[in-house]
Every structure is written in C-alpha cells, then in structure tokens.
Image (cartoon, rainbow over all chains, first blue to last red; front, side):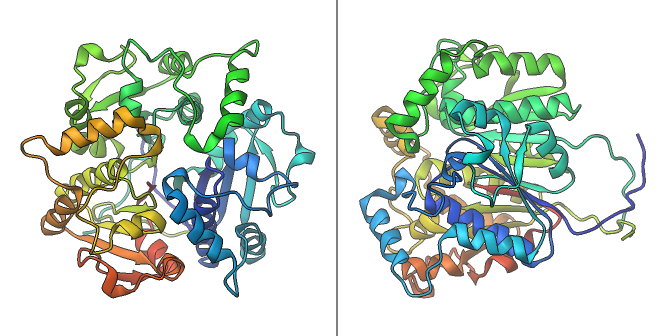
Length: 146
Length: 146
Length: 146
C-alpha cells in the first residue's frame, strides 16, 4: 500500500486512564492540560479504577495515592492538598476542557463490569464508547496508559 | 535527512506488559482485541509480573487485582468471573490471535531473571526476544506500557 | 492544513517515569538503553515517586518492588541483585547516556510538591522542565508512561 502523507494537523494525545488514585490522576491531568495548551486534541478513555473515580458522588473527593507511596507519600499528598493555590485534578480537568479539545469517554465494558450507568458519571465525562471507537479516535497520534 | 513518507499500512500497536494482575491484563487484552479487529498488527512484549503470569501452569488461573483495588475491588472482579458469558483474558487473547496479526514475545532479560524457560511459557507466547528486536517491531506505531 | 512530511530522522522515544520501584525502573532503563543503542533520541521526564528515587542520596540504593510483587517477588529481586554481573539500573542509565542522546528532565511541578531542589537530584538528571516543554520534545515520537 503506498500513499502520500498529506494532512498533518496537531498530533492527538490519547490517554487510557486505568488507575484511580490521586497521584496518577494528577499526573494524567497535567499531561492533558499541557497538551490542550499546545492546541493538541486530547482523548481520554476511562477504565476500571479511574472510571470508578469519575462518578459524580466521589470525583471531587480524595482518592488516596498509589500503594507504592507508603504512609509518608500519603502524608505528602495530604499536605499538598492544604497548600495555598491547591486545586483538585477534577477541577483542573474541567478547566482544560475550556482550553482546548478534550474529549472524555467511559469504557463501555468497564461500565458494565462496575454496574455504573451514564447518570452515575460526573458531567466532565462526555459519553460512553467501546474500545474500537477509542482506538479509531487515537489513530495516528500518541497514546499513554496510566 | 529528508525522505518522503511513502508506505502507510495500518498502524502497529505495541504493548509492553509489565503487570501481572487480572484487571490490567483484562484492560490490555481489550486493547489487543480491538486493534486486531481493526486490522492493526499487534506486538506484545512480556516483562516481569506479566511474564510470570503467562506460564502454562498458571495463565488460566486467577491473578488477583492491582493493590489499589482493595478488598471491594477484588470482590467486584471475583463476581465478574461468575457472570454468565465471562471469559478469561487468556482465552480472549488466544481468540485475538485468530482475528489478526498478534505477536507475543517474552522479554529475554526477564526470562533470565525469573529463571523461566521457553517450555514454561503458555503456547499463546510466540517466542522470546530482546528489547532491541521489540523496539524495532514497534517502530513507527503506537506503544503502551501496562 | 496540508503539509508534506519531509524530515524523518530516527523516531524519538519519550518516557514519563512516575513509579519509583526498582522493577519498573529496571524495565524503563532496558527500554532507554535499547532505544539509545538503536540511535534513537530518548527523553525522560521524572514525576512523583520516580523523581523521589532520582535524588542523589538514594538513587543507587534499593527501591523495592511494585506492591503486586508480594514477598516472593521482593525476594526474587533481592536474589537478582546478588547475581554475578548484576548492575543497578542507575548505573545502566548513566552508561546509556554515553551510548546516545538520552535527556533526563525532572518535572517542575513534582519538584515543588516534594520540596526537592536541583541540588538534591543526582547528576544523571540533566535539568528541570515543565510539562509543555516535555510534550514539545516528545512530539512526533513514541511516548510511554511507566
């Protein structure tokens, strides 16, 4: 198959969010915001523990840290939340949607597994889709699993 | 260096599987199946705890969940396994190899570290290779670390 | 927007290092060394627990294994360290910088969160930068989150 590459708009950044702890979701949000600020389209696909964390009754709460953080790491994150100027990742993510093209989709399979319905999700999530749709939207860009 | 991009077949998806828990291996298998269904070549490279999970004496068993799942999350996955229509990720991965071009290679360095031999691996693994070979097969496509 | 793709040097490999345990840092270092050996430019961005591990007073010590390793996995890694020919990942990373173009940057936001200064970092880290600079350096190449 031979084609000539003709289009090149800004490169898409796609993130599969799997983990539901605040340290990883902070790190992910920083990447989303940075890419949006650069004018890059961003796709986010929510699976498993990240999907669980995006439910409207808990998204703005604390979600702990990765188990590797240990008690000291947990304490460090807790102190970080008391710093003046601190902002929860969920709020940063909402603002990133104002900055650029950030599309957040819940994984249909994970929705079923967790018994989560569309109404359970925080409105920062734009919808529910299957993995094939996600992969198509990610095509030709960069993709991360977090 | 100036070259003109001429070939463009379907984009390769390459996954470094590092974790050996069922939630991550489920998530990885969903991505592999989706990519194979889209006609994309898929490369899988097995390291550490994922490699350990691909041994023939244990691949089809339970491998627990990520530590962040906690007891509730573990219970949720256990219930998922009792759902009608449930299929183990190992079986889904075998079927994905029938759908498309899915090549699964064990990392030679991890094999040595764990004292795992080719005969210990489940036949779903196609072989053993070094990281340079894996990186060459992944060139020009998307790559994920799970 | 239509442009013709003209340059194509070797593809950049960019790694966001988030985890600070030896198994993940080993796996990451193997990828860095492999890419450097292939003549590919490598960018490393240190966040959270990986950043913490790159401090000069601890980089060359033991950093444990991912919690999923369990006691058996921890013991396996401990034994690996006693094998003749064993080399710590930090030393392998220093050598990889001699092999090729490997640039290691600490995430400015994580530096602030952890109260880590430039002087606290091991000299294997080349500097401190923001996420936008990292994303620009990663553009057009492959990117992994570890």
